[in-house]
Image 1 (cartoon, rainbow over the protein chains, first blue to last red):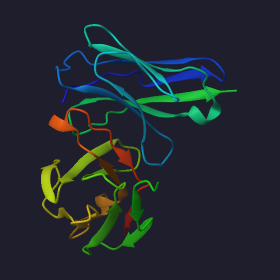
Image 2 (cartoon, rainbow over the protein chains, first blue to last red):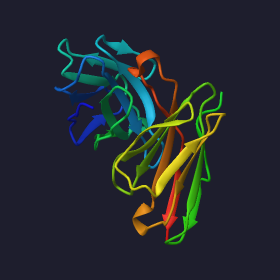
Image 3 (cartoon, rainbow over the protein chains, first blue to last red):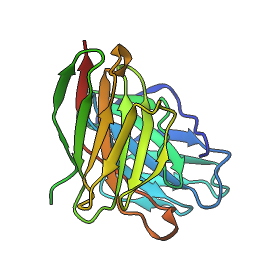
Length: 107
Length: 116
């Protein structure tokens, strides 16, 4: 599976958009980009996934660059409940979780 | 619709004992995955079962084993427990699409195993 690189942590103001970057320069053609988040000691929660087109659902938007070497997860209006560790994963079947980005939403 | 359910929620064992953890996937899902998350560490892939067969395993010793039943539920067995086996064990399920390229996994709340 391709490796991903994410910032260790980031802060975000409540109500503002949170943009979480992820680099995956070794992604191969059949690998999807998945985003999950884990709120303290709970099971990871699926957020969104994409192959090459930008995607949006009720939770977030996913922007994938044309060369697919990086992506950005956008939480449009962050709330305190969005405080979590966010994982960017590139995979075909097995999910390899790195350290993720610890996102802290501040009031 | 019920999500992935795991039991028990907590499990306390002593060194050398065996632990059995159970997982019921989302209805219609045929694949079950097991992950270990030690305190303060990331999730480590343990095992993948699909249609009753073990498809892949992570870098864990053979005393970590499991199986998948005809109803797609699964159990994880850890033999000869060691102190460092203390962790949150997470189960996920998915329905593999053709070619397996898209594989959205949905996680349970986990079983916290404490080895004393």
